[in-house]
Length: 208
Image (cartoon, rainbow, N blue to C red; front, side, top):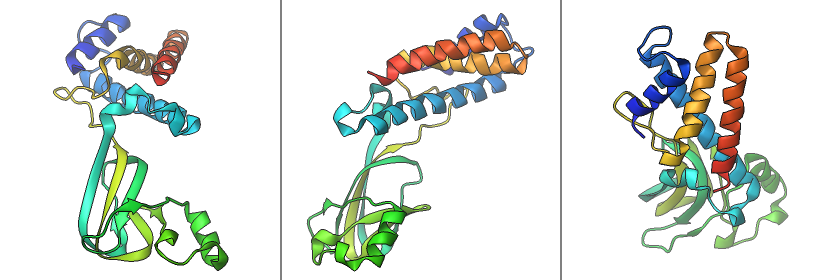
């Protein structure tokens, strides 16, 4: 979505055709916050509905996969643009077959280590968990590989870089950004109206 077109729509709703009370920079910042909110809402719906519900169309532009090879050790870097992990597969040694690895929470990992009876012997016991900016495998890789399928964070909206969201998200972006800007002018009733409009639009989008 073109930033200039989104900005023009917002200025029309604010009844300010040219930069005055609201600068172009403020509108762009509001659009970035709106983009984050749309993505977070769709991700919330997806994670609460489970994989059977399918990935909302809103999130499909951010599906990606990255493979790392010749990896040694149990602590490996996560992609810098990671937002949400779908699946991790790994091979513990060079030229090995990559197999899915369960992703455990750190609390479950600690519990398993304290109760060794939960851990089965052999390759089937491999699992991993996220710790800060790293993915930690329960057993070290020896010149192995791993593949991570995930949702990436969107690129920032700028004057020249538009939103990566699908075109049908433009109404939600405009409504949310307009509501934020009206708050600055203490137009609380008008702002609340646009927040309600945003809520209606984003609920529809998250169901697609």
